[in-house]
Image (cartoon, rainbow, N blue to C red):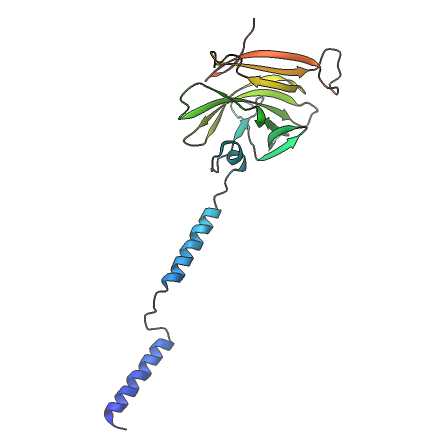
Length: 223
């Protein structure tokens, strides 16, 4: 074997060793990297859990929840109950949430079919609206309230501004704006139990109430 042929064989052998042991620079698989980036992006997207209630009721794709402040919770330690599921019971469309406190547990059910927008403020930035909700706990009561809320159209955050007690085990009828010229007033009607009725009976006494609305709260209008 001549010297030149020996050199060529040696060089080929060295290159084979380098490739075999991974010392040679590998080629970049751009397709594989692209697929990996897409998989990582998909995985990161899946980590964001969109809230079903906010999406269904307000068309907001957000992870923020609509939270109800329990009216009877202490002012220095309020209890907020997130609405987490939508159900239909007794032909009432409800957004429901559950809570567990140190001494109490129960649920909140909001009748979202009776959400009533109130034309106050700047509608491009926020929406003021009222909605009735019920609070039930370990007792037998089912206390209905009228809640006042403010939805920020930029951040999808809902603030619970005020609550007004309506009654125990009432049956809601209507909520609306009685006069288009007075947008800061609501009128609500519902049935409550008469004095001679047992609480297990269907309430039969109709109540109509006018309510003044502002950004600070709800006020019953008495004549």
